[in-house]
Image 1: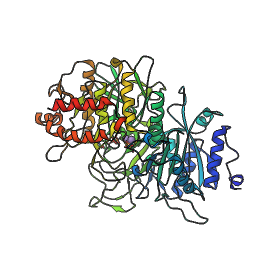
Image 2: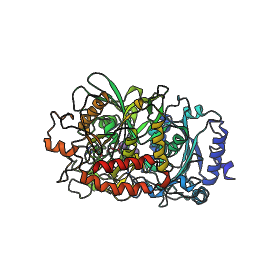
Image 3: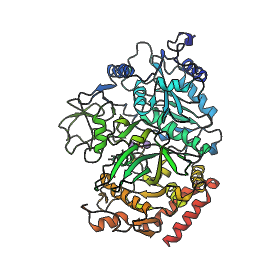
Image 4: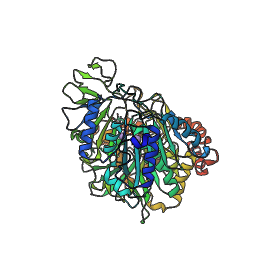
Length: 604
Ligand code: GDP
Ligand code: PGA
Ligand code: MN
Ligand code: MN
């Protein structure tokens, strides 16, 4: 009965039968007041942002064009890894690093949660495409959501709207991505600025290539094209089809000799991807251009090289620490407006501010919890995982080829994490398998990007721990086999970096940010065969002379400390790596045990 009465359900702007049937099924289950097909137009953006302002969710900024300040519920600020599930048919396919539940059981739990969950709200149908619509096989998805915040954020982060729906035709495959805030409204009930539910589920059905999300409005939990599709579901597609879906930035580096190199880098959430992707080199003659700051899809070209493409369309960057000194290109990107800022502070003149934006804080702010804030306040004004959401096209150093469906050929892959000790500033893998070992054993301190304790060292393989949509042992094997199946001379060379090593006083040993260009220079000189290195038990590390530190206010001891490979620190890693590898049983490729043996014997 409801279906017949639901406005918007029967006059859909598509003839795609599978899509129409699914939208109807979900509308009948969730019983929204109406169904709206998202066209992606400016008028629609205007209408929805105005609605969000009227609802008290958004505050329109005076100081930046077409931009909005938004505060979430204080409980809904990050990805919820303990509520994230890979519901493969066979539990072994989810592996030891993912939460798992039988898909049938999960569906019956979530079906009951979804029943009537959009009452009093609108169901939006968002057709989207990850990567260019012009691709040979465009990667379509459709998100259903009852959140206007999700619709406007998806418009920034992905290619969405009527042109995508048109490209889907009558029968092109798409990933169905179901989302609800889980906060139905009864008749006459006053809404809150940030509806969400205490019950949260972020669920993936890898065989079906389907996503079900419930209870959260936070980016990584609710913008389903991003982590859920482009990493978890796409990693399964990549395993099956022989490509790679990775948590990597993509940058273009031009040397003073005008030679260009494309580099991809995987660091865990809040460990420096967005900053490195937009880096402003401090060394003369070098140039960086941005292609992507979070996700790379990589496929081999006919020439045997690995080509990377950023499937996203926007930047969802960590706000705190982003400033004119550290990341001026991000500041220039957001200056242009058209952005949503979530959980940062609001200035009295209608602008935004966060810790690290400027040296001196404004005298008065409204903090992310809506309270008065002054520099004397004891808590930070902005949540540590507060975010800016901005179109990538506004980035002043965007590489023109960023949306080339073919992608760009990658010369080097960097892995990196946040470690106070042990891991040197940069080291180069001896070969592909050693590089896979570096990725498989990558470790990092946890950050505010996910709920839970911050600063705890954990293994975060390939910076993909929360994002591998299948058994991580199979994922390691996929990387090993990728190396085996291709011409070794054309594979990207692999490096491991750590910008976060500390001295005894707790200060960073390396200045980071724009100065990381010095490390990129060494990487390029290794590719060219011109930079010296010392062979250490963990790989090739720059000699003190081969790393360009000219003009840097660093003592030779500091550089030495940043680059040091200390056997006593590495010996402590061995039992941790052993324990980590044991989790995977037979699934772990034997080459990983071989690499561990090599490391042990080199450490003596
Ligand atoms: P992403 O989440 O991986 O994209 O990481 P971001 O680039 O957004 O950086 C996360 C946090 O780490 C921010 O607060 C940055 O200011 C900080 N950060 C990024 N790069 C560096 C660096 O080279 N050195 C130091 N010390 N901090 C950094
Ligand atoms: P990040 O993206 O990697 O830029 O922090 C969001 C996330 O991974 O949660
Ligand atoms: Mn990320
Ligand atoms: Mn980022």
